[in-house]
Length: 130
Image (cartoon, rainbow, N blue to C red; front, top):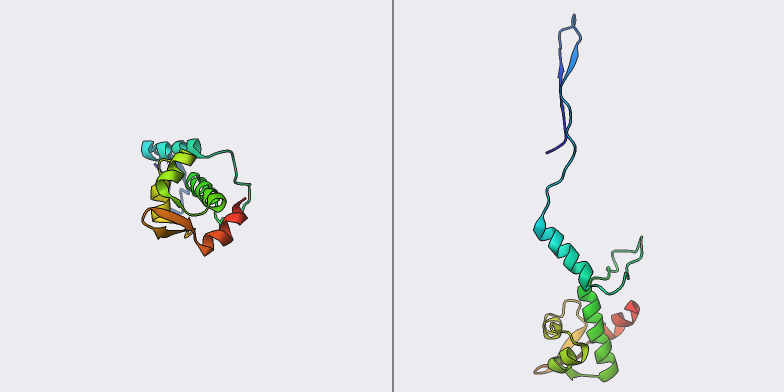
């Protein structure tokens, strides 16, 4: 698994011999079907290729989830407070309610039952992702 071989070194000062007992094998990482499916699913859900090479990861990278949250945030910017069900229908985004409820980035605030708007943080940060 490590791709390491085995060498025998004779410590006898009169013989000074080194013998290769086992050559290192070719490195073959284990395949993880679950990881592969998650990675391919992420790329299928993304729109375009928004991450530039060498981009600063501290600011955050564009993921499929962030793209969906940005679409919802832009909808709220344009239309004001709205019901999660209306946003889901307008954007054809079945996970809109979950994205608004979980509020991973702190961009949304609940105005009343089922109605959301952009938070002050969302109003500040969303334009930076244009």
